[in-house]
Length: 259
Image (cartoon, rainbow, N blue to C red; front, top):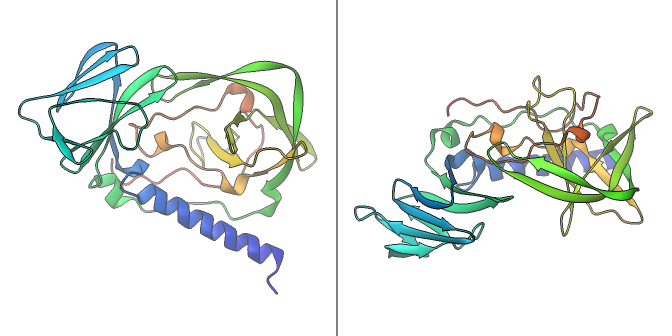
């Protein structure tokens, strides 16, 4: 019979293997090599001009450039943000329109990037089941605004109507989650940031509360993409999500050999 701790260790090994595969994927953060924030009007890129008019985004390809869009060579295209089928290719390099808050940007990825080839893998804290904690979804008296800034030129506003309260070594802490359709997205900072973990903070995902409760597993805490590449736009933990404790669990700051 497999003991509970052995089963949990196995889950964490699988989790870390999936994380490593995602980082090393051709469309992972390690391949992100460019980011251009788009202004309203005409924006010149290396392969074409992108014109933004409100929600309308049009690409006119430069005469000397060869751009593939939906497997066809094109001279122009109308683009939608964050759509997997709206990706432009110049050789093996991909370019995708993304939106973060009200900010539009063109993100570039090169599967042959030096960073992707040289990445030595993530470092992790030892698995510690004590950092897998039960949390209560405590309703707020009134909903309040959760303002989320990004590592690059963007901001979003979310409404939150509950906090997640949990205890570590007898001390109660609280975090404000971003509620997604199928899970919670929890950005946080702690006293390891800037030392063993990324200075900007970390994040984890948690199940939506059931009967007012969920589980926060800090062994699954991850480093934001902007720590791997300066060309990644990633949300920054809000000030209210600072934990005044050393969360020695989850992924450590990356060892970047080359950019």
